[in-house]
Structure formats: C-alpha cells, structure tokens
Image (cartoon, rainbow, N blue to C red; front, side):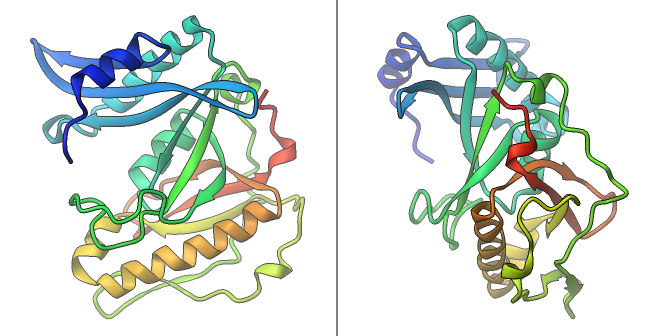
Length: 248
C-alpha cells in the first residue's frame, strides 16, 4: 500500500501516538504504528499497523513489538489498546488472542471498503476489533479455559481440491446465552491459499464466519483465545460469555 506521510506519523507520535521499529544491524525489519483514540469519554491507543519483513516472520518479532507497545502505552497512561484484523487470518488471530490475550466482541463488515493489496484484494474487508486491556487481570492472569468442556456446533469438510469448507449452519438461534461450555468456531489454517485456489470458497468462508460471529457477539459472547492444531487444515476461535471476563 502507499506509505503514510512522515509528517503525519511524526505529529501522531508527538500527540499520544507510538511509532516503534525493530532493527537488525541498522536494518528496519518490523514496525508498529498507533495513534491516540477517543470515544464515549474514553481515551485509548489505536494500534493501526503492525508489519514484519517477510524474511523475518515467524520469529516472534510481532509479539516483541506488541510487548514494547504495551510497555510504552502504559507509561503514557493508557490502559486500553485497540486494533483490527481479518477474522480469517489464523496467524493474526493466534498472536492477538492466544499470545497477547486481547479479547474481541465487535465485528465490522467491509471495514476499509475495497482493498487492492495482495492480502485483501477481491473480498469484503471484514475486520474484528480487538480490545487489549493491558492492566487487566485477564491479560496478567488469563481466563482459564476448561478444554474438556469445549465443543463446536460448527462443522467443516474437505473439498475435492483438498481445501477446508465450512458446512452451512442454520440454527444459530438455538445457541444459548451464557453457555457453560466454551464454543469453538473453525477458520482455515491458511486462508490465503484458499483465496488463490478457489475464490468462491474463500467468499463462502467470509460470509459464513461473518454470520456466526455476529450472531454470537449479539448473544454477548467474546473471543478469548485461539487454538492452533498442528497439521490440521482448520484452527479454532474460543468463545465464552463476555461477562465472565475480568477485563477492566
């Protein structure tokens, strides 16, 4: 995408924003950028971008940048950091929910309109808006999940192309509020491969997961973690009633 003007990032960083870089021998290999946000009488840090050089991904740099962002945000007086990510990108979901212990109960349809970069081109730019309550008990001592009680009412299957496919689910109204058992919601382990091989299948995933998450959010569920299953074609979101979380 086009670069942000330097005068804009400087102004943001001088007025409550944060611009952080990860360097290896003077080379910039990762960055995060956020600016001050304010809504309903509450100030927070809006973490707008996080990027890692492709040669240095899967080395934990994203988590290190977020840890530094958390440190500096706390020093500036923030207790909340927010950002968005694609609901079908498992790499981001794992970092945001499982490693950083952010939570989410907000789904935004086509958040940025039509996007033409390689990751987003061709599909509605749906986003999840996460909340990272950096001083909360949930972040310091995360919600304890009973793995034995977890279940998923949602099914998936493999197509003839050996790609995972979400099985349509029509009984969302039957899922009770304040369920004692955490609910699992599947998403593809590698959504970008599906986008490259089968556009219609990718669109079906987008619309199906949109419907599921919006329905569960309306029942006051929240995303609290993410389960990566090695060598499996799908991973799973973990959802629990939001009123059970100690986030403020």
